[in-house]
Structures are given as C-alpha cells and as structure tokens.
Length: 317
Image 1 (cartoon, rainbow, N blue to C red):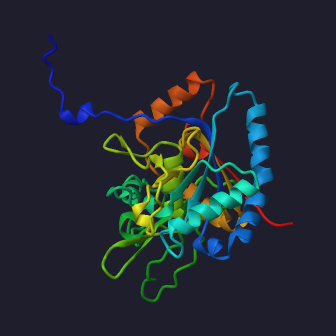
Image 2 (image 1 turned 30 degrees about the vertical axis):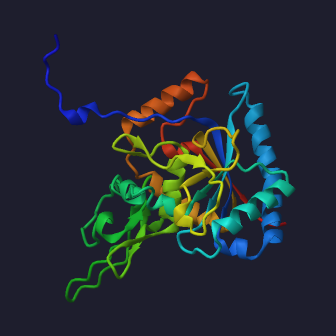
Image 3 (image 1 turned 120 degrees about the vertical axis):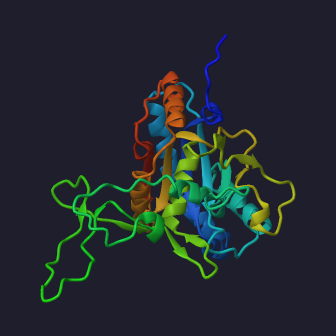
C-alpha cells in the first residue's frame, strides 16, 4: 500500500477542452461599426469573405488532416462601449453574414476577457507575466505589476541626472534584436477613480488569443467556454454568455492554431499582443497536453504561444 504523503495542491485536475484544428476570427467589431448599419457591416464581411475562403483552402491543401475542423468567430467590443443591445446587434450580424454567405459559428464579448463568470481573467493573465530580463536596469521604474507597463526590452534611462553632471541620452534596446531594435512599450491597464483597473485593448486581445487557443485555466478549470445562444436575447450584454454559439453544428471554439482576419487598424494592437504573450508564463501541464493531442492528430505546434497565431491584415484597395 502506498503511504507516501502528497500535498493536496499537487493533485490538481486540469480540465480538457475540445479542439478545432484552426480558429478563424472573422473580424473584431466596435460598437460604432454596428451604428453605421447593416450595409456597412455587410461591406466589412464582404471584404473578409475571400480572405476566409483562401485561408480555408490553404489550410486544407496542406494535408495536415483529411477532415480539418475549422471554426469561425467574431469579437464584439462591449467593454469600452455598449451602444447597441444584443437583441438588435446579433440579428443584424447574422443577416449580414448570411447575405455574404459567411459562416459565423461563435460571437464573443470583449468584456469577458476582463471578467467572466466572476473570474478576473485579465488579472490572472497579468499575474503570470514574467518581464524580459535586461542588463543595466537601475530600478528607476516600478515593475509591471505596479506600473501597468510592459516592454520588449530595455527602456531609455528615466532617472534624474546627478548634480552638476549631464546625463547622456541612451536609446531603448529591444531584447534579442536583429541588428536594429523595434522597441515597444505597452500599457496593460489604467487606474480608475475607484481604484479598479481599466484594461487596455492589447491586454484584452492577448487574453482573447489565449482563450481561443484553449490555454486559459483557473485552478485547473477552463475559463471562457461557449454556450448556446439564448432563445430570447436580453437587452444587456452582461446577461449574455462570454462566447455564444450561433451555429449548432459548429466545430469546437478552441483551436490548436488561430488566424485573425483584421482591418489594418489593428496592426499596432496585435504587435503589442505578441509582446505581451511572449512574456506570459503558461501552465506547463496544459501546454504539454495540447502538444500531445495535436501530435496525435498529425499537427506539430510551435512550443511558444505566438508561433500558433497568424494574421491577415486587410485594407480597401
């Protein structure tokens, strides 16, 4: 009989999720996009449609699997504004997508990337940040947990010059730069008057990517899972599920890989997202399980999260 002692915390159970081979984000929509009406929405979806078809064809032709599972999703901004109720917005989106013959499987609320079912999702991800180690740091700037700022290298010195001595300017330096630096300093949150945090777009988008990749856990429990679209749509977004499943026959929401088809206005935000994700410590057990499951299906995943994320940035010609 095994009488060895093991702490309860070591017996943590990690919840698994179902995976598609690819999760495709068809667009990230602000409330002002819906205020412009269904014609504007149709024009955006019409712009996305050929890119989506090309992506599906390219992914399928690679022969990674005989029957690739591909799911689609939209992310709706209900965090920084809430101008149109779900009862008006969801039918408008579905009608516009149907007219352009674009399949919409899931719609997600951006506010759920901050808090979902009482879980402080963004705070959990922020708590896993491990800043890039840089040489010569003098401690003049507070750590990211206090400042809310995260960089991909070494900032320019900001300390006061010594008396009677002129401090020479030094440029910021990107960690692991290739010949020249592309230095990025990302604000993760700002402080509200009541002391709460207002999370930034890049931070919420980083959480969104981790959610789509099926890597978010809270004490082993999966965070942000899809639920059926309510039969009667409420007037408040807070009453809606974090991720709504519009298509009953949709492939799983989570994907081994993600592809985001975005307007070029998001290019800077997604650069910041990659800076954040490169510095988020992942759950080793979850990462290992996903790698094993993908390998069993003939898919080889990059060991790092950013290697599983792809983008297409679009613009009107």
